[in-house]
Image 1 (tube, rainbow, N blue to C red):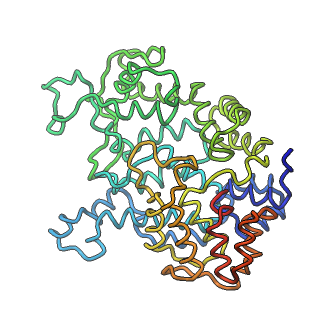
Image 2 (cartoon, helix red, strand yellow):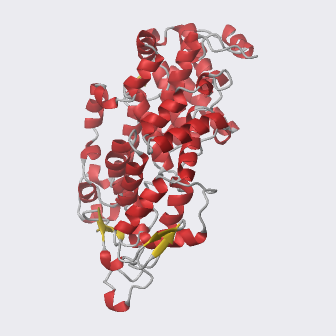
Length: 469
């Protein structure tokens, strides 16, 4: 029988799963008030002052601008040249995406609302939007700020509706161009020539956002859902860039979705009925419960944890706090089998390295380039599936070598804008207690015995124990 986790291991394990890695301050706080009280504190992020991060984010101009302002101030390069704009604007939408990436990494490293940031990252990946596709170069900033972040710890139904109405999602999955196949030539407007029924969003809505690929829907359901969402579009994607319902483009006929009749003449209400139906469907409870259990417990989550999450989802009407409590409170969460069983994604690895070493960093292009080389350029996953959520996708030889080079550059202060102070490192022993208390492998211990100082810390950051959480 495997020995249970020690109290020190439980704290480090808890922080590895519910934050972007332990820091000395987080461990001190969790030990001071207890893990359960610390978790409840994290479930109420609005009550946690986050002045340091807010001041940093305030320095990123694009993060507070509307989509319309971003389009006007950061136009595509050819338009910027025509208007003879300044150098900052000449960078166009690349600057918008860059600051969005900087903000995500900055929050992952320094925010005191760590669990909230973990859930923002989870939902951003679940409801993925590719920030480099056309108008999404300007729309993704609002998507992160106004769609994902306000609902990251709320009810699933509210988040699902917010994504369905988001201009970024409407553009990414082409639903803004979807119109009734019965739209007559007499009702065609000047921008309607390429319109027709588009099934992209309807398919991903069921396969990736709610029911799951085995959730019990058919191709006919995809078509019927697509009909329900006709007319959900964007008012001038490169202008106001706001959601609007265009009744003229809607298929007003009767529909049947998953056996449920949707009467004719419902207008925008057709899509709202689909949102309610999918948000409360048993397959959705299982699919979302499984994904959350995979994120917080194991790549192949125990059926018992999935069942608890699924039950909490159904009984609470998709209240994320209830679902997450069910997962974290399960014995399986703190089991020896779960301890360090998950491979860190690149964002988790880079952020946790900066946190565990107490690094002072401005978050630079170099850090973002490292994330790209490790396989996770932020906001730039092209497929609707987002980035993989299982470890096998992140452990190729090239990716691991890149992580080792990053660890060496970080600890040796070779990363522009980042600095690891000697007193912050505190020696390899202190870092080892933050990474893997009482559980370094014999191979890692032997390697440490042959190194010292910063080299020993870099070795720890490259060791298997730190690659996992």
